[in-house]
Structure formats: C-alpha cells, structure tokens
Length: 130
Image (cartoon, rainbow, N blue to C red; front, side):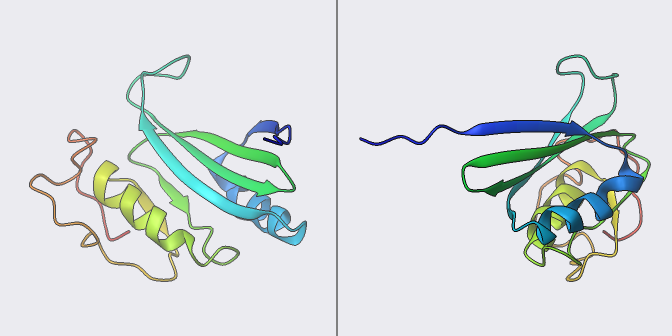
C-alpha cells in the first residue's frame, strides 16, 4: 500500500474574509472537500459560538479555513467560487440556525425535514432564510 503523506494547514479567519479566501484557494486549484459546523464549547472557543471549518484539497495538501461566529451573526456564502457548497450551507442553516447570505441555491430552511428547527442548536433564534 502506497500512502502519500498529507500536509494539513489551518488558517483562522473572520467571516468578512471568507469569500476572498475561498476565491483565492479556487484560483490556486483547490477543491472544496467539506464544510463542517460544531456548536461550542468544544475546545478553546467561547461558549455559545459556532465553529465553521471549510476544508480544501490540492495534491494531498489539506487547507482548513476556520472561523468562530456568533450564531446570531450572518456569514457570507462561498457558492460564488464553489457552487456545490450550497448543500453544506443550507444544511448548516437548517441544523444550526446560522444565517448564510448569498447562497446560489437557497432552500430557505427546507433542505431537511426535521422534527425540531435548528436541531443542533435549539437556542438559536429563528432567523431569515439561509
């Protein structure tokens, strides 16, 4: 079995930097691997915040853009650079209640049929459409 060594780079950014950072990685040939969200506290982040991790890959180099956001804040979509991100972003909106602006295909909170709104973050207030 031939295993190629992976190189992982984490970069902490603010929400205002997200679109430009994603566009820059797209321009360098990186593909979107995943967008993950976790409700804190889970580590060193402030309580009652959300941590978003956007992962990109090129030639066995994994780059993570990481940001901490207040669940009441809005985060810009990366679908202008990575069209397929609309599924991740709608999912995060539906399950965590995070408002994501400018999604190219916005399901408006109806991607998933869930028993409870914002199932992974029930304390989040009902915001606008994703």
